[in-house]
Amino acid sequence: MNKVGPARIDQWYLRQDKGEAFVVTAYDNKSRTIEIQTFDGDIDEIDKEVWRTLPLEFAEPPEDWTGPIDEVEPDDLGYSETAMTERDWSAPLQPLVTAGEAWEDTRDETERDAEGEGVSEEELALDNPVARASLA
Picture (cartoon, rainbow, N blue to C red):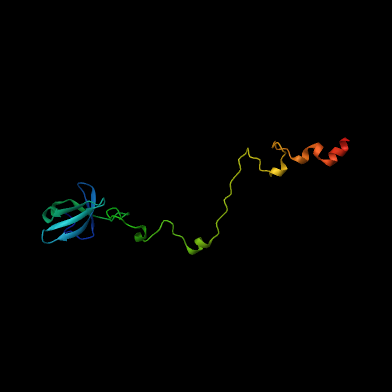
């Protein structure tokens, strides 16, 4: 006889010889079978007599209990990965700040010369009235 005794519905067991965990889903008195479901979702039946000979031990339910269940909606799990509070929704968005590249000229276009060489127009002697007066 195994160490766990009779099958209990909704109890998880570990089959020691195979290392397989399963949960008992039902017991059929008429056919004397125990219905089980593995974590992968496979459904099987075990005769009551075979149950007594299996090397079983009690097991904890898996952390992710949704494995054998088809089509579980995230809302059914009772938690959300993006649990936001009311304060989160009312907070203003932060502006996106991008860093300029080292090769980029961050000066305004009006400060550059017409050819775009990066020399401001005010630095050219002929365009500066004070400099032009001193040359004359």
